[in-house]
Length: 167
Image (cartoon, rainbow, N blue to C red; front, top):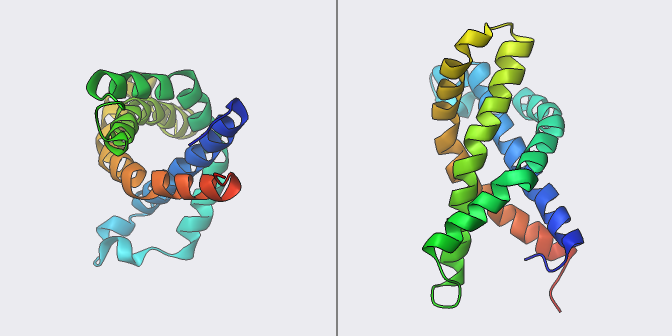
């Protein structure tokens, strides 16, 4: 885990882009209708991964910004209310922090994506934004939770450990 402010920024960048890329793969596959074809997500093509990489380049900046401003703080506060690292298993405390952060960041990023992709780029009326946001949140929350728990966070911790090995 990060020990300095600089390490915290590096970890935050890694985690932000790991989350942004995974969520963009998911959303682009859905946008292309991959999930509706026989075989579902098994029909993804390499273009999904390329298109997701392009979108993740700027969405990762938003994830980093919003998580730095409030997502990580609220996630840490949630974990602190429900877990004491001195008495409880530190791994459980870390999982609770991740869950609390996802519970804040998914609605935040779903709103940002709804505004950007639906209202600004697709021209949906602003009056429909609440419904679009709820629909986007319902679609994204299960993926964001499980992607964070089982892919993005483990990958981020692994990569961070390779960059900053503990002595």
